[in-house]
Amino acid sequence: MDVYPRRLYLQAGRGCPTCCCFATPDTVQCRYVRLLEPPADLPRAVRNLSIAGGNLTVLRAAAFAGGWAPGGREAAARPLAQLTLLVLTHDRIAALEEAAFAGLPALATLDLSHNPLRAVAPGAFAACGRLRTLRLNQALPPAPGAAAELLLGGALRNLSLARLELAGNRLRELPPAAALPPGLEELDVRNNSLRAPRPERLDGLARLRLLLAANPLHCDCASLRPLLAWRRNATWRAPDARGLRCASPPPLRDAPVLRLRAAQLGCPDGDADDEAWGLPEPDGAGQEQLETASYVFFGVVLALIGVVFLMVLYLNRKGIKRWLNNLREACRDQMEGYHYRYEQDSDPRRAGPGDL
Image (cartoon, rainbow, N blue to C red; front, side, top):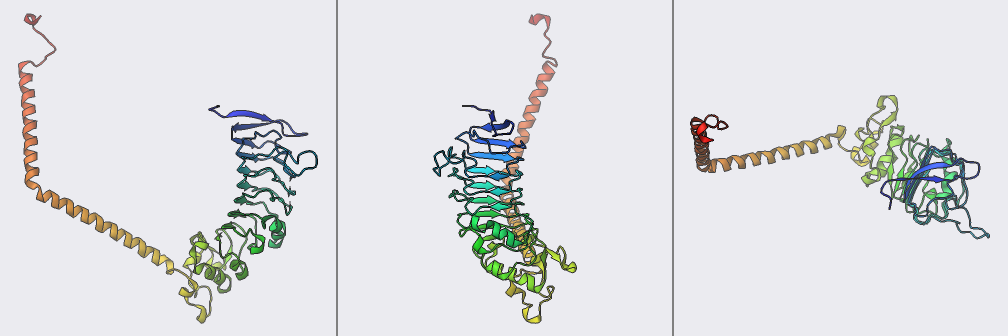
């Protein structure tokens, strides 16, 4: 078995130069080679496949498994039964046709980030029964949220995803629950254009974790109340809530959301109850009190250890004094013996004539 990575030369397809991929028996990487089609001769034992910087444009049926078998049967010609990770970033993919990933029964993670997706067939992921993580960061068209819903709604509905990443897509609205896989556990919508998540959209996402950092949130009473109320009873729903900051209005720009008071948001007197909103102590006082208590407890523990050490020294003072005296006497005897030998023969390397 090869210990060091070996170089594989794979024929990319019609009209395309031979691409040089560096591979181990279960990992193939093709980076920034102008592929027009997926490599035609992928090893059947490959588990991790990465193609970055290509020009794939359109992924047809069973694109990575040799297409459909001849004879009209809807089965992949060369299925890759062990492939679990497929990374296709910066490949200029604009369209995913029906059953584009057929022939990859074990596929668990698919990364289509940084591609200009414009068309996704409803059955593009139909053959990916084990797909758990789908990354579509900076891959959706720069259009209002409705366009993204139409693009992804039919394709994602039948998947059993655990994590969906939609970061950096300039989304103005959260995707509706109907357009998401039913068992989704985590949705990443960081670095989008979300200003005020609507209550009905948040209510549909009550059973998953939502990552919202780096969105231009508008901080006023009407805009923030749905988000804070949604998070109030289950703080795990927004694991990055402490990193959320306001983008507007100007007086509150860059202010941490969880340190704002209801009065700062312009709420009427009847709505100015911070506890009802689920807001923590002002200016992080609760966190500071917890840290202070931790430092005090640590100091008390160190003090107790010091007191015990001093008591041990005090109770054993006679034994310690005796041990020091014995050590001093032993050192003195050693030095006297050294001086005696030196006086007898100051240079033992020289020998007199009678010793020869």
